[in-house]
Image 1: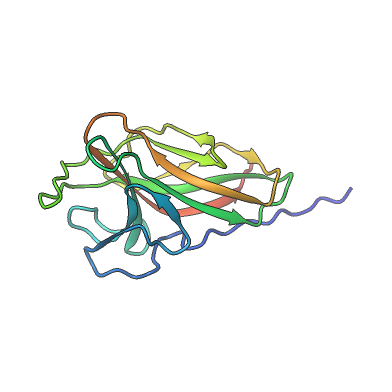
Image 2 (image 1 turned 90 degrees about the vertical axis):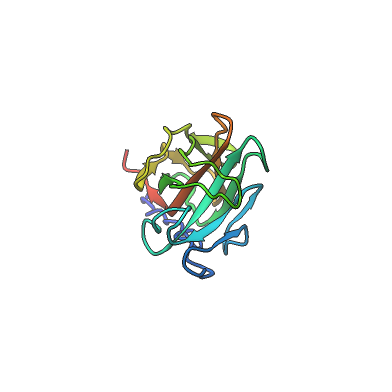
Length: 176
């Protein structure tokens, strides 16, 4: 039986650069290629949000809030998986760096994150992300279909408003 070289699915707008935002601006939802619920969106630049993306200038945010919209979620349905091939998902994450007096956001310490594949947990909860971008990789999974929904969901581990920033999401062939 010949070995089939599996395809590597590509996420749409994996670096959250589209559409372009003004420097130090943010947008609730409306991220090309992504969907979500509650508190999620994307931002550009620094200020109370961060110090720019891992690559480029923009990044996604997803919040867990005990006093507001609840737990956010950001998703993308990705096509192109090869059934029988082994994959993992990799992304960069950090926590939001500051508060915002106008919106009553306390200084942020982030929150653990969970990653789901069609609502099956494949990573998490992670440790609380730090102030610098760090790469995270899910456990490997064997594709049984050609399309999956990838979801990022923060934990509401403590009361308050906790925001994590995500950038450069990729699907990779798992080597182990």
